[in-house]
Image (cartoon, rainbow, N blue to C red; front, side, top):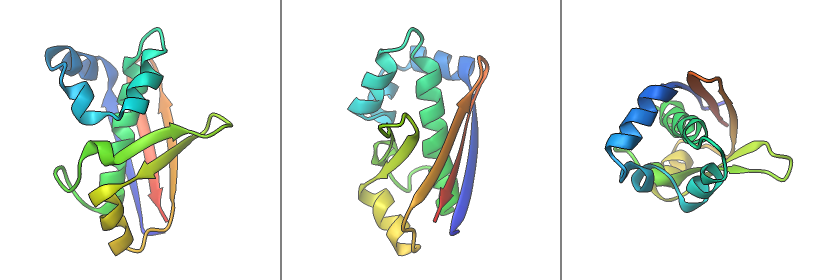
Length: 121
């Protein structure tokens, strides 16, 4: 394993940020992530857990904000429904430089908190 990242997001605080800054949806999430969340009664928990995954990828790679665009890490669903990461652009280049050949991701959320764990392999 090359690195592990963990991130936790307070869902209500995240909801407030998204309400104050509607453009954040476009900056943080891919079209696919926004579409998946839009199909839910309350899209914010799905977005919050995906944001946590993006932050966890940064931590697994040992970098901070600004190392790559949030849109370069996308959480998609496998046919089974399990989450999977698609890493592109500068994020993929950074991962390749560090020898990352694969990813593991686990997502969870309650009413109050969203969490993600990412292993860079």
